[in-house]
Length: 113
Image (tube, rainbow, N blue to C red; front, side):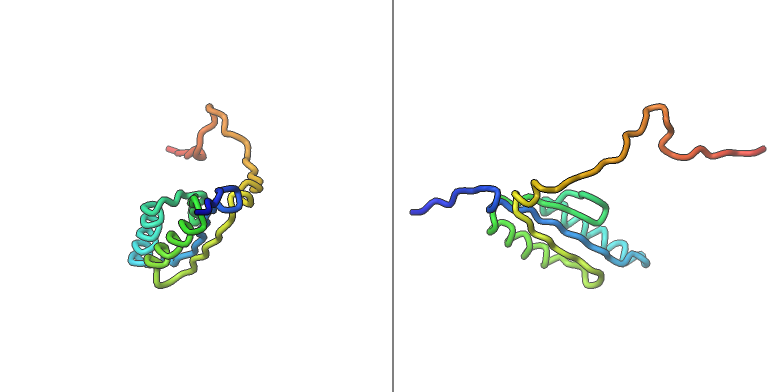
């Protein structure tokens, strides 16, 4: 029996990018259900329409892609990107400055009487 050693080239990450129509109430409901199903399947939101999930192996990745296909919306665009753990480790993130505690998070509303 041969044992497959897991390494950074066997562990996978799944990215799901989507652009779904949300003009009507029904479309908004379909989009919300799609996001909810992604989270039920273990995906986490990276950005509003970008979700990511860790898969321990290529076989696990295939299972999640198949499951994702089962709850795809009828309209809109959904893209799936699969990368190895090694490739995922090469991501470079840039973050903006942190907000100061005394700075209001929303613009001030001026009221004139």
